[in-house]
Image (cartoon, rainbow, N blue to C red; front, side):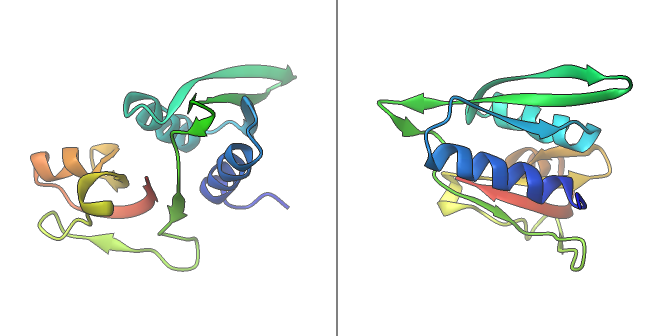
Length: 131
């Protein structure tokens, strides 16, 4: 049964990049859409679009990004899980690969990258690392 939308999204992207798929399909939610907006703005995916698949049901198609047949996403790791939430202060936000990757942080001002959260001096829940 489908329980955690973040782990579902990250797992589908990870397996899609391993088998060199051009796109993957995930369930739509506000959280998934916001994470995909961050990934698109940071250059990890090409684009995504929401599609209607029936009455009151939608799915999101995520178009993966490759350069010279190598994925722009080399690694994904979910940090906060439903059973264990991980929070961080603004001064102690994690650096992913010394700044080469991003950490997605859920703050009181919405989802943002670790760099943007440090600029705004806001801490929050560490959702995932992407590099």
